[in-house]
Image (cartoon, rainbow, N blue to C red; front, side):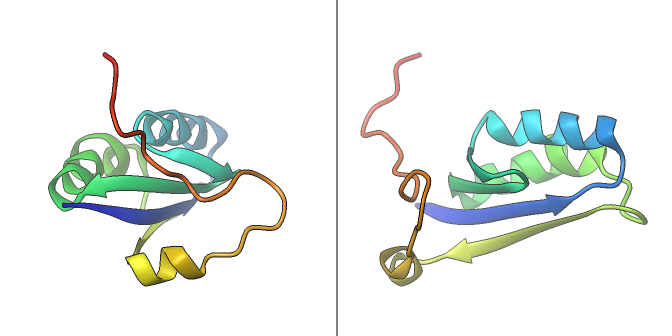
Length: 94
């Protein structure tokens, strides 16, 4: 089942930060400079973490945080300026 995740990071190195942002943007929507909304299943999130995101980080200098947002949290979200919370499309054209 797809959940909505809030993903944010603080990466010290510009090159690592840029690579991580590009990788996250492949499956998530950027809502602020280092904050993303990600509608992903648990297994897909775990795959991205292990294969694509964590290998780019230097954990002694960087951090990546992922917060689950349940339906209640999403309904209570307030956005002032910018796009509304991400809604995945009903279909995907590949």
